[in-house]
Amino acid sequence: MCGITFLINRDNQPIEVSVISHITNALKHRGPDHQDTWTHNNVGLGHTRLAIIDPEGGQQPLFNETKDIVVIFNGEIYNHKFLRTTLENKGHILGNKSDGAVIPHLFEEYGADCFLKLDGMFSIILYDLRHNKIYIVRDRLGIKPLVTYIDENIFIGGSEIRALLRHPKVPRQINRQSIADFLTFGYPMEPDTVLKNIYSFKPGEIGIYDLANHKLSCSPYWKPSFPKHNEYSSYSGKQIREEFESLFLDVIGTHIDADVPVACYISGGIDSSAVTAAIALRRPDLKAFSLSFSQAKFDEMRYATEVTEQSNVQLHKVQADNITLENLYDAVIRVEQPQIFTLDVANQLLSSTTSKTGFKVVLTGDGADEMLGGYDHFMADAWRRRIAHIPGTGWIFNKILSNLGYPKDFHTHYKKVMIDEKSKPIGLFGFIPPWYAIWRLNQNISFPLLKYPGRDPLDKDGPIANICAHAQEHIKNIAPLNKAIYLEMHTRLPSWTLWKADRNPMVNSLEARLPYLDNRLIDFFLKIPPHFKMNLHKEKYILREGFRNLLPKSILKRRKYAFNTPINKFLLSPEKLDQWLGHDALIKTDIFREDAVLALLNKIKTPEPSEPFKHALEVQTLIGVLTTQMLLLHYEAT
Image 1 (tube, helix red, strand yellow):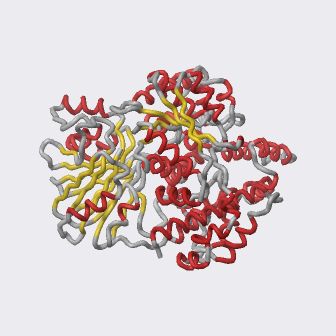
Image 2 (cartoon, one colour):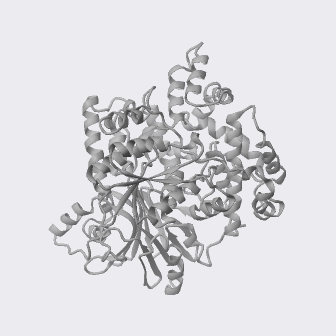
């Protein structure tokens, strides 16, 4: 795991080593073990290293034998041993034993097709000096980050925004449309960031920059493909379960491959519990780290304890009650993204404790919910499709929503948006996204706060409509659940889940590995019938079936529990918020209406709100406004 940077002077002026070094030094937390730069004419590459495989070797840049292919990369290549053997059998001499050492030789052998052979998480910058071209590549799903900025003078990229902002020619302009999108969806929608013209490079794409004419062309090298309704294999449930169990254990084996100690996170949910139990089969000395909270409704420690005791795993409890404005500010600056939750404070405390205990690698359960329809909204949508069209079933559907944890005030809104007015989202998107009711309610709350709302994020020109329009050939004949998962793979997964899954550990020099998003498991999840992902009674069904001999029954039977943290009382004390939400601060960013922000602050003080679900979203919106202000004031963006 590393931090990477690149800089191209588009006026062909030579790169100053001091400039690329200064940019790269912003990422030293991602790679405290070694830092290096490399320049050639108007191209500069930078790298900070967290040494995990081949700690003594493995420095970057990486080269082929003739040193006319140059590579820097961030991530892990899980099939590097197989690829190394293949290359050595073809006569290649690899410079070191690191996983990344295979990349320049693969390119030498296969050209751009080599990236299809990589099973891993990565952002890669490859400079082909033979043809004067630079290749920019990001893994299939966007597990590893890469942000870029380009204008007539420079083309710059790096693992984090903070590196780009060290270059004096990168402007700090507010992307107001991205903030409107954030308050609707709960996250800025990739490729946008909160800063104008700084973009996330798209997952599953190759960019080729021709240094001769300074043109950049991008194209996808991978797209998710789901079977059509009549194309599912004839495998029995037993065969699918056995294939999954074998594949999962094999994936775990590749993900614990490291020359340094490996730990895991466990929350008590089935995703992380299965990862923990599976690692323990191979690593009897495994240590697991889990967050604990004093408030019982947030604490899952008893479930984590049950799993670790059964698997003989040492459990480290990390107490995470102290959420203050100060550590929320620190967390937001580190994650480089505004948030509607305070989760990052706890997650960064967790990674700090894990790192300080002596670990550089941690395995997590991230990604399973997105790939298998694990959120309650997917279950609600399945029941909507099943019974909403049947007269007289309204009371049944309300009961289902209650059982899923939705307060009564949400039932009316859900029925209006998802049933009575369903023709609108179907007309825009071709189907009804499971999160659509939440998005609409978020929008109703947040848009009155904005001075310049911009285009409607949920209209025909918004990001969801754009994704669905480009995907119609891929999704028009697939199952409704798979349509929702396809959308999830292009929205929440890269824009929020993976953004945080990288940055929250890496601020503390800790690499997170996500076995559920391994290429082989992704291919498996895409091909299996929808009812093995989620049926009307159980979400993540294949996990429960595949792990029934591995996990306690209490974990297998437990419903999805959304990880959250307590909201501190600071939201009820406006005087403490003045630094970010006061008159001067709001004038400086010029995004939010002061009167509307004050009205929302007063509204959330209601001790017993009549609409508890809407109230919860109002609190989230206020946190979103607060963290947006924190981040943009820190950036001194205008």
